[in-house]
Image 1 (cartoon, rainbow, N blue to C red):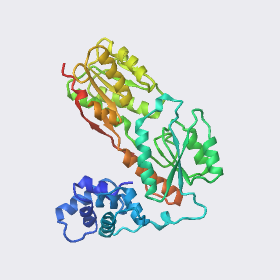
Image 2: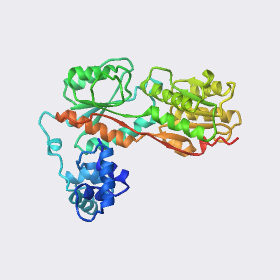
Image 3: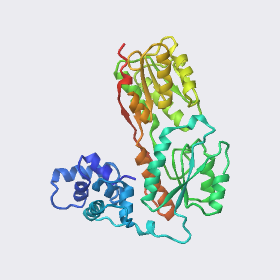
Length: 382
């Protein structure tokens, strides 16, 4: 769901200016008003002031705004005054339907943690997602109840939580093709929203980040740097995320008139040691790759480790890119594709709240754009 903050960012104005422009208030020149209006139209923005907009205007977190609205005594007076002024500036009115506590509401959102038995999905990005999810849920007066997801298809945790009324709905991640959890919750008519695509014939609320586009950005960047022999290191076929990113690799290579060699393609579980071995295999190919794009940052670290074992340097002898832009990528100077995790979490919660409240949204399947963060690892100057 587009927010006023997104409109303001696209128009390169403040949140307050965007609000004033869309309301035809005095003090905004015609040129700025047109720019803001065009930005809103391009995002399909339906005018609706949210907690995120108030937080952005006040320069505080969503949680802080929620605390102010709920009269939390721990909020400093100066912060409370700042938030109240932002509420007044934007004429924000809390959604009483979302804030009312009903006797049959648990005010909890169920979220399954990583499948720890499955090494493919040990992803630091989901740790970050959980933090943002908790903040977004708190803005509605909800909290997150975490439980473990069994590796085999099964619904015992979901069945138990539904039967005991412990949660009002679920957030799903790590979605798979024809995901059993999604099918089950749809059949049970239980509110849920997912981060991830599953089946084109299923109508359910989800947010996704265009992984195909993200990998295209990485490959196109390397091609602009003069690379043609670009290898790909990913997960075994059959995962929604991995298959999309691999397709993005092929799309960018073919668009540049480059036919990828079969020996440039490597597959490995999401384990550092295995990524090291896969890196050795693809970098010993003939013709030799001068660059490697990886399906996530863990893979890229495996490539880096292999290069160091051969007295080679990432970014000098071989260009390397990762995916997810984890803190490790920032620390090691790794070029990586960044996903807007905070926006994903906030939008997932917006969609879930609409499901819980029985609100029909004009759009309940949202695809967000990734971006490429360029660092030294993708130089490849030798």
